[in-house]
Amino acid sequence: MSLNEQKFELLCQGDSRLLKINATRGELFRVEAGSMVAMTPTFELKVKAGSIGKMFGRVMSGESALLQEYRATSDGEILLAPTGSGDITKVELDGSKQYRISNGNFLACTEGITLEAKAKVKGIFGSGEGIFGLRTVGKGTLFVNSCGSIHKINLNIGEEYIVDSTHLVLWENEMEFSTELAGGGLASSFLSGEGFVARFRGPGQIWIQTRKPIVVASNG
Image 1 (cartoon, rainbow, N blue to C red):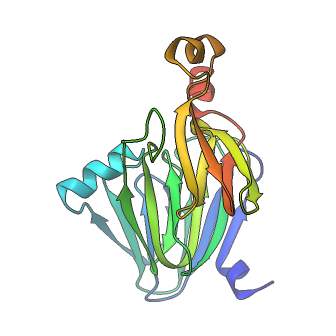
Image 2 (tube, rainbow, N blue to C red):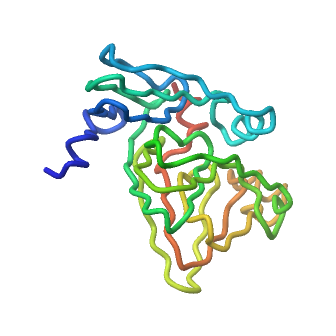
């Protein structure tokens, strides 16, 4: 088992995943508000609100307006879980690329990663960007949660792929993409049961979730 695997453990199975972080003194972890399940009494908690603009951007991206920072005052552990049912996936960022996290899918990250609200709405009905999300900056370990399982799609240069916007979890920030109505118009999209979709063009990687949060919530 590698040092990274020893530090981060994914416990339980299926849609009841639990993230265990084995922290050493001085380490800091950024965590989505409300995700802490249990911990040893070895952490200092600091709530980061940021400016009004940053708070608004986080809310529009589906995240809490408040970001929590846990710093280990000595060796210990902390258990984290999504606020709803779902899986957890670990993604290692080497700093060479930025990523976008969509619709409340952020769970936690190490200190070397910062999160910026990234929301452009000019492309809701066509070209450009129309999906609210957080942009990652920096190097470290990122954890995202999902509704259902997470599946990764690799696109080659020029290859296109269409994803229902409610199934998006994470994607490379530099990928070309546009947002559009699935059926080409409001009436046909409504009748088809689909809404907005994102059309991506490679190269790049996309992580999607196998269930729609709205559908799962309505059946709860």
